[in-house]
Length: 191
Ligand code: GDP
Ligand code: MG
Image (cartoon, rainbow, N blue to C red; front, side):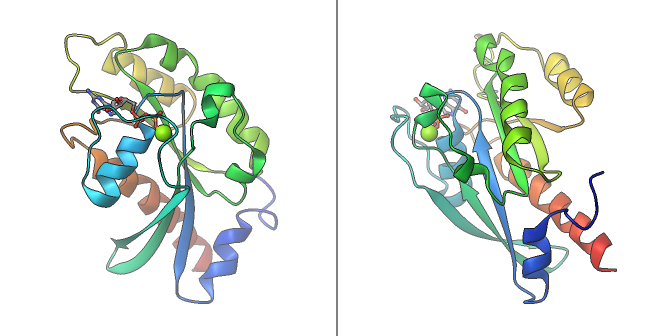
């Protein structure tokens, strides 16, 4: 744990207002399904041939945790990850992250370590991170087993889930887990 005085300034800032706003970032290689996970979660939409450059900068979503309303401000890239050019502004103030790979493309799984390094370079806090193996519907094309995903998550101290933005499987659960955990950390601090 880092110095408690320096930890999670954003959480402390918002706690007086009774209005919880958590910045959460989507990271991971191009075309793993980040934008579609957000579209599915926030609008229950799926885009079969989406271009990586299309998407919102961020989307604010109301959620209920322990009977309390919180707002998740979920940030999506606009394709800059293709050029490994996600800026530090993207990460600034983030308290949660969904690190997404595609279970049907091993290369995207091999990139997870690099994304973790980048996340930790740009955020000095303990960002609540879930490793997300997306496209679980592509059973025939699977290149990364569930066990491999889970093992990596355990080794790097991350939460783990497999999702499908296409058939909606576990998409809500992935976002819910991150927000719940941030909320729990905050509650422990306040008490
Ligand atoms: P991003 O670059 O990480 O934002 O990825 P996108 O959300 O743009 O998705 C890239 C491509 O993968 C698009 O053609 C999507 O339709 C497709 N895709 C995204 N999620 C899934 C999924 O869960 N299952 C399948 N089969 N395809 C998906
Ligand atoms: Mg995208």
